[in-house]
Length: 77
Picture 1 (tube, rainbow, N blue to C red):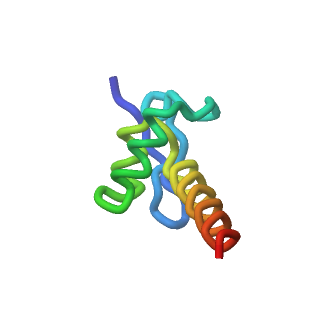
Picture 2 (cartoon, helix red, strand yellow; picture 1 turned 180 degrees about the vertical axis):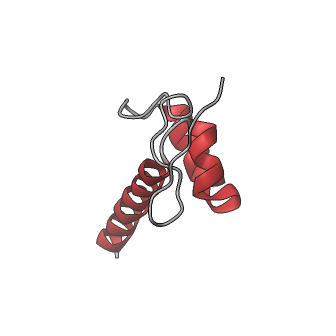
Picture 3 (cartoon, rainbow, N blue to C red; picture 1 turned 90 degrees about the horizontal axis):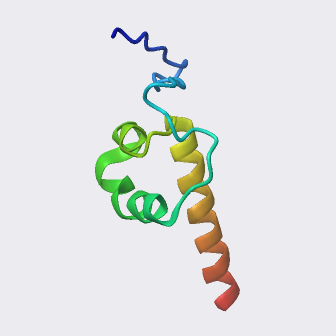
């Protein structure tokens, strides 16, 4: 089976149904833990394939997690 891959203007793989089966579905605990623990090690491109979500969804989710963490830490001080 040949799959045509498309990339956005930044070189990120665009949504491809055969690779991104979890696109648009809620995040589960295991995927969130994997994202948090491995994002800085493997990056968004490899994470996209591992979690079956588009690279943009990976980047958006990590941004929101880090923003919330920063917000919570700054409220404690």
